[in-house]
Length: 304
Image (cartoon, rainbow, N blue to C red; front, side, top):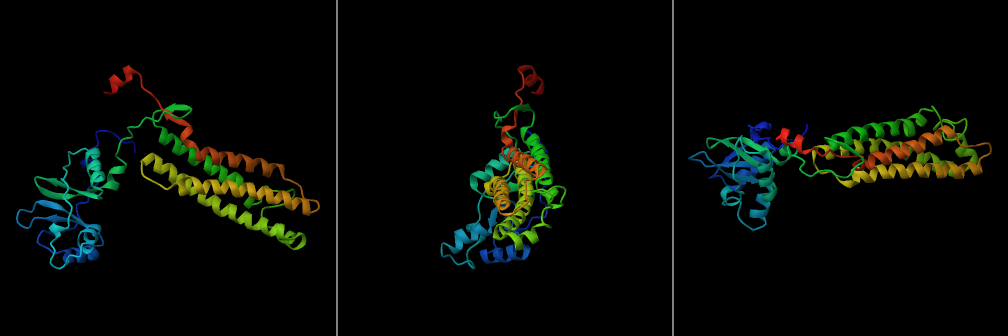
């Protein structure tokens, strides 16, 4: 889904079954309700006017009551809640998102005619936040660089996994002449020593990290497209470890070949391993593939 500047809170899926609590309730009552309802936040409602007064979350209870040494049985929720201006259906998503970011809170109440409709969360807004930063780094100009990078990264990573990891695992080709991936290694371990034990271990690690790299690059590309944070350990480190293990795999094979009579490099296996590593590097560095297509003045006038 591409984000647009005119998205409003009404375009979101508003949680209309959100749990509320009366303003006269104590913090203990709020804590019990949070536990029973299995939600992190409660909307505080004035018991007389039914207007929204604020929001109290589990963090507020810890920070404003427990850490301050206050008695949660006598402290009212109004003394521990945070006050954030409610939004309406017509409020821009960017405004709601900015308000939550500035206060470092997760939800903001949504009202209509001073009555609570529900809440929208920081997470709800992420997908609808427009990417206002022009991506000017890349080789090819496209209208939506992040979406293009997602599809390219997904495709090349899948190809790398199939040709560099899956095909050898099924014995379509091997790493040395006449060999499949795992089956022939057992006798070689017994006959030719510890180096083949390391080869077997490395082969299994390549398969395991290959699967992890497939999902990490896919998830990282989604995070770039949808504008939410994912750790670089997932986006970059795991794929690089996979490439490192693939290189180590061939180094170990090269050493093993010197200790085993009759073993020689399978050219097809080496070729596809190199291609697969290059494809993984391409997926990792996908940000350099595409850049934002700059519209001409005439196109901008038509769009506006």
